Structures are given as C-alpha cells and as structure tokens.
Image (tube, rainbow, N blue to C red):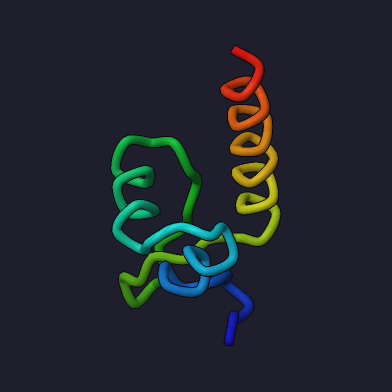
Length: 66
C-alpha cells in the first residue's frame, strides 16, 4: 500500500506498467522524479507517475504515426 510519502518502486512500476528494473533505470537517468525517505527508501508521488504515463502515451502515439 502507498504511504504518505508515495509509492514504492514495485508499486509505481505496476501503476506505470513496466518492470521495476525499467523504472529504476529511468530514475538513474533522471527521467522520472522521486523522493528519498528519511529511512533511505525510494518513493514515487502519484502526480509524478501521472506525468510519466502521459509522456509515455505521447511517445507511443508519435511512434505509431512515424
């Protein structure tokens, strides 16, 4: 379950529809925003995931038109 600080990497990957390793790669490349909790865990905010999904949709549509 998502906590107040956001979703875990596994939860966020399920929401976006990608493997957790893919989301981790994107994070390391700076393609997706995240926060680090005081305990050192990575968390993704729902609004950040919505932006990522929207960007993925645009790229997929552009790819189909080319």
